[in-house]
Image (tube, rainbow, N blue to C red; front, side):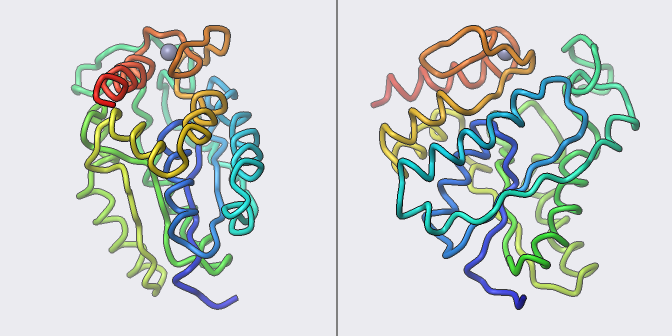
Length: 235
Ligand code: ZN
């Protein structure tokens, strides 16, 4: 299959950010496929949300459904064997001596893009899209624009390709991510994001808030909830 600028591959985890990126991509590209990664994450709920969100999206937005291609799931479980983090092991969520929270999985996004790029080439996609954000993030060094720009260059050189990386949420905060979802798909999309995406570090699906499911107390829930509150206040 030859490369075409109209096809994009979205790194789709099942969380709020990548779900919003998927809708963003469906607005812009003639064909959009998704890829997820099994990296031995403690809470499988995010992976389970992926299919439900894609199905809900296709049902609610027929125009997008015609452009939504297949989903791919790649094995990245090697990450689990590389080190203990709060995302893969029973480790407390806390700030570490290196200034990074224990939820940081070293090398995760670098590996994800490295795995996604050859898949994109095989599928004829010329753009990789990720939900990384350096605005109100947790200080993860692999979520910075400079990191993605550097990796894009490396992938282009290493693959002999003009593949691009796009990160539409890079410079917006969580309130604007909610607003972006609303501008892309109105209440229907906001409803899908709240019901069928998952962000909570503790994997809590028992508690339902206005902004979705989660414990309400972990750093991921706090970011998602505070963004929702600020977005609601600004509407
Ligand atoms: Zn939580």
